Amino acid sequence: MSVSLAANKIVCITGASRGIGRGCALAFAQHGAKGFILHYLGDKTTEEEVQSLKKEIESSEGKRCVTVPGDISDPATSAKVVEEGVKVFGRIDALVSNAGICPFAEFLTMPVETYARTRAVNLDGSFFITQAVAKQMKEQVPQGGTIVGVSSISAFVGGEYQVHYTPTKAAILSLMHSSAVALGKYNIRCNAVLPGTIMTDINKEDLSDKAKYEGMVKRTALGRLGAPDDIAGPVVFLSSDLAKYITGAPLLVDGGLLVNLQ
Image (tube, rainbow, N blue to C red; front, top):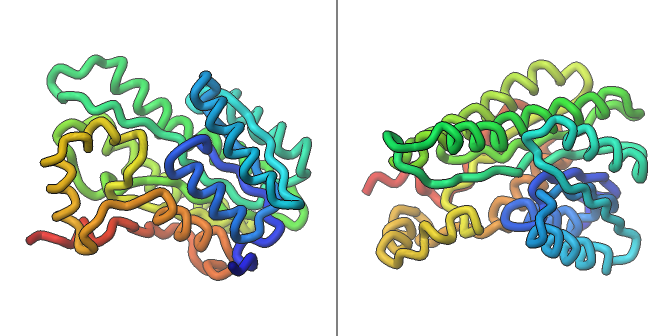
Protein backbone atom coordinates (compact mmCIF):
# COMPACT_ATOMS: atom_id res chain seq x y z
CA MET A 1 0.00 0.00 0.00
CA SER A 2 1.19 3.52 -0.75
CA VAL A 3 2.67 5.35 2.20
CA SER A 4 2.84 8.78 0.56
CA LEU A 5 -0.35 10.29 1.95
CA ALA A 6 0.89 10.61 5.52
CA ALA A 7 4.60 9.82 5.20
CA ASN A 8 6.48 10.64 8.42
CA LYS A 9 3.63 12.70 9.87
CA ILE A 10 3.02 13.17 13.58
CA VAL A 11 -0.71 12.66 14.15
CA CYS A 12 -2.85 13.50 17.18
CA ILE A 13 -6.22 11.75 17.54
CA THR A 14 -8.75 12.27 20.32
CA GLY A 15 -11.01 9.40 21.31
CA ALA A 16 -8.51 7.07 19.69
CA SER A 17 -9.16 3.87 21.60
CA ARG A 18 -12.16 2.66 19.58
CA GLY A 19 -14.46 3.28 16.64
CA ILE A 20 -13.64 6.03 14.19
CA GLY A 21 -10.64 7.24 16.19
CA ARG A 22 -9.03 3.82 16.20
CA GLY A 23 -9.80 3.39 12.51
CA CYS A 24 -8.12 6.71 11.73
CA ALA A 25 -5.01 5.77 13.72
CA LEU A 26 -4.62 2.50 11.82
CA ALA A 27 -5.20 4.23 8.47
CA PHE A 28 -2.56 6.85 9.19
CA ALA A 29 -0.16 4.08 10.15
CA GLN A 30 -0.84 2.26 6.89
CA HIS A 31 -0.15 5.45 4.96
CA GLY A 32 3.20 6.14 6.56
CA ALA A 33 2.66 8.28 9.66
CA LYS A 34 5.44 7.66 12.17
CA GLY A 35 4.29 9.33 15.38
CA PHE A 36 0.95 9.02 17.15
CA ILE A 37 -0.48 10.98 20.07
CA LEU A 38 -3.44 8.89 21.14
CA HIS A 39 -5.92 10.50 23.52
CA TYR A 40 -8.44 8.34 25.36
CA LEU A 41 -10.80 8.71 28.32
CA GLY A 42 -8.68 6.73 30.77
CA ASP A 43 -11.08 4.24 32.37
CA LYS A 44 -10.21 0.54 32.52
CA THR A 45 -11.86 -0.32 29.20
CA THR A 46 -10.34 2.50 27.15
CA GLU A 47 -6.95 1.90 28.80
CA GLU A 48 -6.96 -1.69 27.56
CA GLU A 49 -8.18 -0.62 24.12
CA VAL A 50 -5.58 2.08 23.61
CA GLN A 51 -2.76 -0.17 24.76
CA SER A 52 -3.79 -2.81 22.21
CA LEU A 53 -3.88 -0.09 19.53
CA LYS A 54 -0.44 1.11 20.59
CA LYS A 55 0.93 -2.42 20.37
CA GLU A 56 -0.57 -2.92 16.91
CA ILE A 57 0.85 0.31 15.53
CA GLU A 58 4.28 -0.11 17.11
CA SER A 59 4.59 -3.60 15.67
CA SER A 60 5.65 -1.81 12.48
CA GLU A 61 9.26 -0.66 12.54
CA GLY A 62 9.84 3.05 13.07
CA LYS A 63 6.44 3.89 14.54
CA ARG A 64 5.90 5.22 18.05
CA CYS A 65 2.83 6.07 20.11
CA VAL A 66 2.29 8.37 23.07
CA THR A 67 -0.93 7.75 24.98
CA VAL A 68 -2.60 10.50 27.01
CA PRO A 69 -5.71 9.86 29.15
CA GLY A 70 -8.19 12.48 30.25
CA ASP A 71 -11.63 14.03 29.98
CA ILE A 72 -11.59 16.00 26.73
CA SER A 73 -14.16 18.45 28.12
CA ASP A 74 -11.46 19.68 30.54
CA PRO A 75 -9.14 22.18 28.80
CA ALA A 76 -6.26 20.86 30.89
CA THR A 77 -6.53 17.56 28.99
CA SER A 78 -5.92 19.25 25.64
CA ALA A 79 -2.96 21.13 27.08
CA LYS A 80 -1.55 17.83 28.35
CA VAL A 81 -2.08 16.08 25.00
CA VAL A 82 -0.04 18.75 23.22
CA GLU A 83 2.60 18.90 25.93
CA GLU A 84 3.20 15.14 25.96
CA GLY A 85 3.17 14.88 22.18
CA VAL A 86 5.60 17.71 21.60
CA LYS A 87 7.88 16.44 24.37
CA VAL A 88 8.38 13.21 22.42
CA PHE A 89 7.99 14.23 18.77
CA GLY A 90 8.76 17.95 18.73
CA ARG A 91 5.76 18.83 16.57
CA ILE A 92 2.21 17.91 15.54
CA ASP A 93 1.38 17.71 11.83
CA ALA A 94 -2.23 16.54 11.91
CA LEU A 95 -5.09 16.60 14.40
CA VAL A 96 -8.23 14.49 14.23
CA SER A 97 -10.72 15.86 16.75
CA ASN A 98 -12.89 12.80 17.12
CA ALA A 99 -13.87 12.28 20.77
CA GLY A 100 -17.62 12.42 21.24
CA ILE A 101 -20.65 10.90 22.92
CA CYS A 102 -24.30 10.38 21.97
CA PRO A 103 -26.45 9.27 24.91
CA PHE A 104 -29.83 8.85 23.23
CA ALA A 105 -32.52 10.64 25.24
CA GLU A 106 -36.14 11.80 24.90
CA PHE A 107 -36.25 15.58 24.48
CA LEU A 108 -38.99 16.65 26.88
CA THR A 109 -37.77 14.54 29.79
CA MET A 110 -34.04 14.97 29.20
CA PRO A 111 -32.10 15.88 32.35
CA VAL A 112 -30.08 19.06 32.00
CA GLU A 113 -27.01 17.02 32.96
CA THR A 114 -27.36 14.91 29.79
CA TYR A 115 -27.46 18.00 27.60
CA ALA A 116 -24.59 19.67 29.45
CA ARG A 117 -22.33 16.62 29.32
CA THR A 118 -22.97 16.04 25.61
CA ARG A 119 -22.19 19.66 24.83
CA ALA A 120 -19.10 19.66 27.04
CA VAL A 121 -17.54 16.57 25.45
CA ASN A 122 -18.54 17.12 21.83
CA LEU A 123 -18.29 20.88 21.37
CA ASP A 124 -16.15 22.17 24.24
CA GLY A 125 -13.70 19.32 23.83
CA SER A 126 -13.37 19.95 20.09
CA PHE A 127 -12.80 23.65 20.70
CA PHE A 128 -10.15 23.08 23.37
CA ILE A 129 -8.10 20.53 21.39
CA THR A 130 -8.36 22.54 18.16
CA GLN A 131 -7.13 25.67 19.90
CA ALA A 132 -4.32 23.91 21.77
CA VAL A 133 -2.98 22.08 18.72
CA ALA A 134 -3.32 25.16 16.49
CA LYS A 135 -1.16 27.15 18.91
CA GLN A 136 1.54 24.51 18.51
CA MET A 137 1.20 24.37 14.73
CA LYS A 138 1.54 28.17 14.53
CA GLU A 139 4.88 28.11 16.37
CA GLN A 140 6.55 25.07 14.84
CA VAL A 141 8.94 25.08 11.90
CA PRO A 142 7.89 24.56 9.21
CA GLN A 143 4.72 26.31 10.30
CA GLY A 144 1.31 24.77 9.75
CA GLY A 145 -0.60 21.52 9.79
CA THR A 146 -4.04 20.04 9.27
CA ILE A 147 -7.09 19.73 11.50
CA VAL A 148 -10.07 17.50 10.80
CA GLY A 149 -13.13 17.76 13.01
CA VAL A 150 -15.40 14.73 13.10
CA SER A 151 -18.86 16.23 12.71
CA SER A 152 -21.84 14.16 11.51
CA ILE A 153 -24.65 13.95 9.00
CA SER A 154 -26.55 15.15 12.07
CA ALA A 155 -25.17 18.62 11.32
CA PHE A 156 -27.71 18.68 8.46
CA VAL A 157 -30.61 16.57 9.74
CA GLY A 158 -32.45 15.89 12.98
CA GLY A 159 -33.24 12.95 15.22
CA GLU A 160 -35.98 12.45 17.77
CA TYR A 161 -33.63 11.22 20.47
CA GLN A 162 -30.70 13.45 19.47
CA VAL A 163 -31.95 16.96 20.18
CA HIS A 164 -28.96 17.51 22.48
CA TYR A 165 -26.47 15.81 20.11
CA THR A 166 -27.22 17.21 16.66
CA PRO A 167 -26.53 20.86 17.64
CA THR A 168 -23.06 19.87 18.86
CA LYS A 169 -22.23 18.26 15.51
CA ALA A 170 -23.49 21.30 13.61
CA ALA A 171 -21.31 23.39 15.91
CA ILE A 172 -18.22 21.29 15.09
CA LEU A 173 -18.79 21.97 11.39
CA SER A 174 -19.07 25.67 12.19
CA LEU A 175 -15.93 25.45 14.33
CA MET A 176 -14.00 24.09 11.36
CA HIS A 177 -15.40 26.83 9.10
CA SER A 178 -14.25 29.63 11.39
CA SER A 179 -10.98 27.93 12.33
CA ALA A 180 -10.14 27.65 8.63
CA VAL A 181 -10.55 31.40 8.32
CA ALA A 182 -8.66 32.19 11.51
CA LEU A 183 -5.76 29.81 10.88
CA GLY A 184 -5.21 29.93 7.13
CA LYS A 185 -2.53 32.60 7.53
CA TYR A 186 -0.51 30.09 9.56
CA ASN A 187 -0.77 27.43 6.84
CA ILE A 188 -3.20 25.43 8.97
CA ARG A 189 -6.05 23.79 7.05
CA CYS A 190 -9.27 22.91 8.87
CA ASN A 191 -11.97 20.64 7.46
CA ALA A 192 -14.82 18.46 8.70
CA VAL A 193 -15.92 14.94 7.90
CA LEU A 194 -19.60 14.19 8.36
CA PRO A 195 -20.17 10.46 8.87
CA GLY A 196 -23.53 8.89 8.27
CA THR A 197 -24.53 5.83 10.28
CA ILE A 198 -21.28 4.10 11.23
CA MET A 199 -21.21 0.87 13.22
CA THR A 200 -19.39 1.81 16.42
CA ASP A 201 -19.96 1.52 20.16
CA ILE A 202 -21.77 4.88 20.14
CA ASN A 203 -24.82 3.35 18.39
CA LYS A 204 -24.33 -0.35 19.09
CA GLU A 205 -27.26 -0.57 21.49
CA ASP A 206 -29.56 1.55 19.29
CA LEU A 207 -28.90 -0.65 16.25
CA SER A 208 -29.29 -3.91 18.14
CA ASP A 209 -32.95 -3.71 17.14
CA LYS A 210 -33.04 -5.80 13.95
CA ALA A 211 -35.89 -3.88 12.36
CA LYS A 212 -34.23 -0.55 13.02
CA TYR A 213 -30.90 -1.83 11.69
CA GLU A 214 -32.48 -3.12 8.48
CA GLY A 215 -34.39 0.13 8.07
CA MET A 216 -31.18 2.16 8.34
CA VAL A 217 -29.47 -0.07 5.79
CA LYS A 218 -32.35 0.40 3.33
CA ARG A 219 -32.07 4.18 3.66
CA THR A 220 -28.53 4.18 2.26
CA ALA A 221 -27.91 4.26 -1.49
CA LEU A 222 -25.05 1.76 -1.14
CA GLY A 223 -27.12 -0.74 0.82
CA ARG A 224 -24.92 -0.99 3.90
CA LEU A 225 -23.96 0.90 7.02
CA GLY A 226 -20.49 2.35 7.37
CA ALA A 227 -17.45 1.04 9.20
CA PRO A 228 -14.70 3.10 10.87
CA ASP A 229 -12.33 2.60 7.94
CA ASP A 230 -14.92 4.20 5.65
CA ILE A 231 -14.33 7.43 7.56
CA ALA A 232 -10.60 6.94 8.09
CA GLY A 233 -9.77 7.11 4.37
CA PRO A 234 -11.36 10.55 3.87
CA VAL A 235 -9.71 11.80 7.07
CA VAL A 236 -6.26 10.75 5.84
CA PHE A 237 -7.02 12.36 2.47
CA LEU A 238 -8.00 15.68 4.05
CA SER A 239 -4.81 15.56 6.11
CA SER A 240 -2.63 14.92 3.06
CA ASP A 241 -1.04 17.11 0.41
CA LEU A 242 -3.61 15.79 -2.07
CA ALA A 243 -6.01 18.13 -0.24
CA LYS A 244 -3.55 21.03 0.05
CA TYR A 245 -6.05 23.59 -1.34
CA ILE A 246 -9.02 22.36 0.68
CA THR A 247 -9.91 24.20 3.86
CA GLY A 248 -13.19 25.03 5.56
CA ALA A 249 -14.90 22.19 3.71
CA PRO A 250 -17.49 19.62 4.85
CA LEU A 251 -17.02 16.12 3.45
CA LEU A 252 -20.17 14.00 3.78
CA VAL A 253 -19.35 10.29 4.10
CA ASP A 254 -22.71 8.57 4.46
CA GLY A 255 -23.16 5.93 1.76
CA GLY A 256 -25.81 8.10 0.09
CA LEU A 257 -28.03 8.34 3.17
CA LEU A 258 -28.76 12.06 2.94
CA VAL A 259 -29.74 12.10 -0.74
CA ASN A 260 -31.99 9.03 -0.60
CA LEU A 261 -35.61 10.09 -0.26
CA GLN A 262 -37.08 6.87 -1.63
